[in-house]
Length: 404
Ligand SMILES: Nc1nc2c(c(=O)[nH]1)N[C@H]1C(S)=C(S)[C@@H](COP(=O)(O)OP(=O)(O)OC[C@H]3O[C@@H](n4cnc5c(N)ncnc54)[C@H](O)[C@@H]3O)O[C@H]1N2
Ligand code: MOO
Image (cartoon, rainbow, N blue to C red; front, side, top):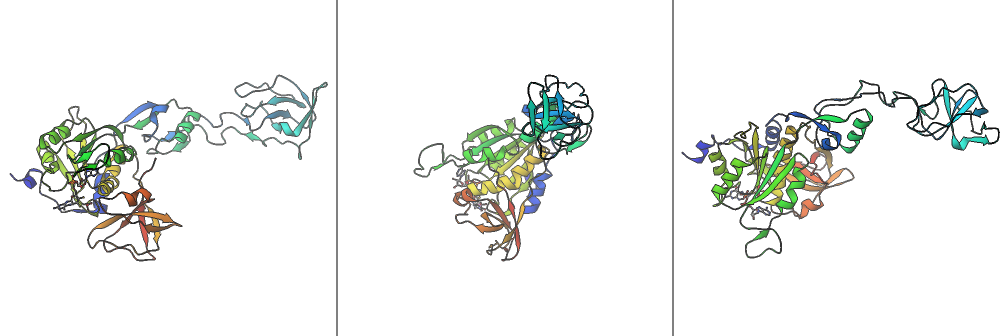
């Protein structure tokens, strides 16, 4: 049986948009799990975040000063209210010192800022020196100002950022229900690759081991990276036994003498969902469904071409949309930007061009060949130039290449 028959009839190359859609549709968000707040960072909320309390939970002083009842001057009483303390009711004509964030005594209480009052110490009388008399409500954060208990604060699918962790804690959460993040194993193929030092006699530095894990971490948890020699059995074995939800390979996508990826996928019983894309660079990129893991988990493989810029093209086209889908997050939408210099297109394929963004217009960068990273290293993003190119005065989508 020939290779095409073993892995299913070869479909024609997908357009760039079809390929990205196929990656977005290639799975369901992974199951929801409850995580301690600190462990939920970077995950997507599996449920809306609903306030478990009013915020603020009580009427709060917004300033250091005094809580005052009625018009001044006031008799100073009590020991004061610090943040975290419980206030006693205040009788009309009395005041008590209060700290920012402390609960106000009940009733129509106003706050006089410390810089607006003067205390006559022996008689313990507080005089009002404010430009206008303190009024109930001023310099007060009223209970429920930010939200009421039960109010939805964030929709499901929101990425848990440091700010979301803080909001969740303020709103009463100890744990969050989030989607499990997909695990990723990176298999870097190529006998010609060096891990250190200068390139020599046909051998080049492995540029993808440093480049890809930080990009892939924007969608999943990279649990391993391995260099695999150009050997069919080793590759087949690595794919078959990978514990990851998503295996990402680099190189070996084309038809060279040691490009074993298609054969290894066929031997593994994989089903190709995308097998080459009408995009430059990166056209041999692929996406496959692997047989499930022993514990029943679905597994997928993204094959990135070996040329480094082509590998980045495959990452933004297939790997990140797939990982974001599995992690329960919406995919990143491109930014639409004006074209102020003609963007030359390929006759039949989409081009992904490293560009700078200047005053909301794109400026293409030189050194954009598939094997080059010099343009990308300066770029603000990748412009998606449709077949035929784009004239001055039109607009172009620019994809973000995630940065730390
Ligand atoms: N007859 C054809 N040959 C090629 C075609 C084609 O359509 N017909 N497509 C070309 C295109 S386009 C690309 S892209 C590459 C894809 O090749 P592979 O995915 O099989 O990758 P390799 O052959 O292993 O390597 C290609 C190139 O990239 C360098 N490389 C690989 N890995 C790394 C790495 N980790 N760091 C730095 N550089 C890497 C490798 O040394 C090669 O120079 O195929 C074309 N050929
Ligand atoms: O896909 Mo290749 O990147 O054109 O070199």
